[in-house]
Each structure stands twice: as C-alpha cells, then as structure tokens.
Length: 333
Image (cartoon, rainbow, N blue to C red; front, side):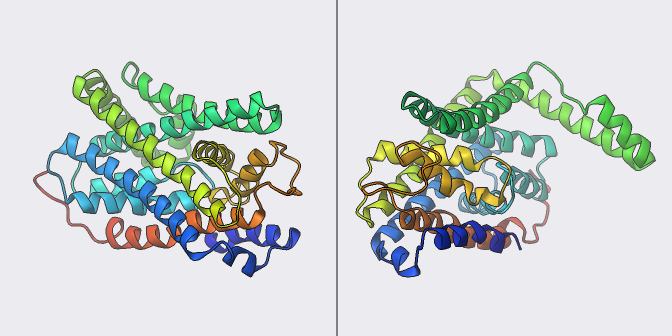
C-alpha cells in the first residue's frame, strides 16, 4: 500500500508540468542505467560497511555476502516508511535470530547508523551552507535545520551512552506499568536492562583504539557511498542535456535528501523531488516554473525512478530472501 502512495507526488508533478512518459524515456537507456548502478554502488557500500563492522565485533560471523545482502535489504524499510530511520531494526532482528545478544546486535546497528547519519549530515550541512551563502534562506533553513538536528541528536546520544546509562523516562515507564500492569512492568524492566547493556558496551568499546579505527573506516565508507548517491543525479542529467558538476550534483542531492528526511511523507516522496529543484532552480524554493538552462522536471522524475523505485524492488527481494527468511539460532555465537 505504501508504494502506490509514493507515486502520487510523481503524478502531480507530471500533470502540473505536463511531463509525458516519452519525456522521461528521452533521458536514454545508458544514463538511466548509469544512475541505477551508482545507486546500487551506494547501497552495496552500505552493506559492505555493515559486514565489516559485524565481523570486527563478532569475528567470522555468518557469510560476508549474506551480511551485505541483509543490510541492503533493510533499506526497504527506510524507503517505505515516513521516517529517516528503520533499517537498523531489521539488522538487529537478523543478528538476534542468528543468536547474537540484543545488546551486541544493537551496538553494531548503532555503529552502522551513526556513521551513516554523520556522513550524510556533514554533506547536507555543506549543502545548506552553500544555499545560505547564495541567498536561498528558506532552502538553507530547512536543510540546515533538519541536518543539524538529526546529526546532533544521534551523535550526542551515541557519545553520551559511554558516560551515562539511559533508561526509559519515569513518566513513560509509570504510564506503561499503570495500564499494562504485570506485562507493562515486565516490558519496562526488559527495556531498561537492554538499554543498560548497550550503554555498558558503549563504555567498553568507544575508548578502545580498535573501535576508533572501525568508526573512522566506517565513516569513510559512508562518505563514499553518499557521494555515489549524489553522482546519480549528474548521470541522469546528462541524458537531458543539463550539465552539472559532480560537486554540485552531490550538494543538490544531499540538500534534497535532508529535505526528504522530514518525516512527512513516505520515503520523502515529493519532498526529495521539490527539494532538488528548489536547490538548483536559481536556489529559489518557490520558483518551480523552471526556466531555460535549468534542470528540467523530466530529469528529476527519471532520477527518482532510478534511485528510489528500482532500489525498492531490489531491497524488497533481499529483505524477504535473507533478512526475513527462517533463521535457526546459532549456538556458538
């Protein structure tokens, strides 16, 4: 049900700006395939990073390629929910099913998502600063506001977990215990115990040189993967005759990504499309009547199909085949 809903903004854009199927097809086979490849490389690098982190903390755990596939498949959740997180729940579930303790699987997922958020956040903040310097105050405010808030929240929680043991807020805990009675008390106790174990692992690992190395390498992987995502638009734009540099393409896509991260629509539908046009269209967020020489809507729609709808199919297949398939718990992990 969620996927058809994401098509609504595409139809609205197509009708509003008279974009016909042949306009999108005119982009050409090779630019479209090139953009898909760039997006697949982005997802593949995310998977490799996850497999690297997992094996660093768990040793020769599971097949390397299966871990890559699980992480790529987990992106389906991110693509189909109105939020900028979600993939980590799939990898935690998968690792737990393989016999990994909840605290360990959560720590691995946190290391993965924090490096992802930090890399995306820094690139988006750069895009927001450029928009601000060029006088696009509305675009800059949204990009910077979203990027700084999300990045700061994750980083603060990540590093504070090594100094402070988080627990369920007392107000929330009391409400759950009051209405859930015995089951409510049990769930709160289990959650508090799990959070304490995660914070203990954070204190244990964050100060070690090995964890610092893992964090740094993972962060570099994330920077490269997000850069390939940014390059996907440059490849699509070539098919329409619109010339954009690699740097400008990365900045535009990351600015649009920050706008799309607003938990308003499923997978940022509509927000990402309008965001990239707002960023490139003379940096005027309200000038959606695109002038000559500026990126056209057919390129934006083509880019969205290549980097969103095609990956949805790939990630869904991997999610069902690997992450959600029956997994017998291992007794020796």
